[in-house]
Image (cartoon, rainbow, N blue to C red):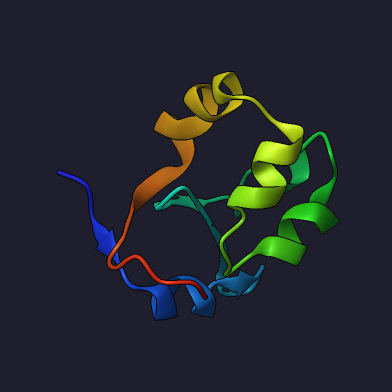
Length: 84
């Protein structure tokens, strides 16, 4: 069963010191340890940390990328469907 994470908890994880969480299609991903390995660079992930990154994610990635990293990075689902 997936952990339910509130939008405010995601928003609190917006810098390396607190961890970097992003939302993609209602899934919550902890990209803290992935940030240095991100091919687009750390700044991209830091810019969207604590927010819904669905739109920029899908602009540059396909479903295969999400499937590849989902098991490793997904920590839960968004508690309620709300924009941050």
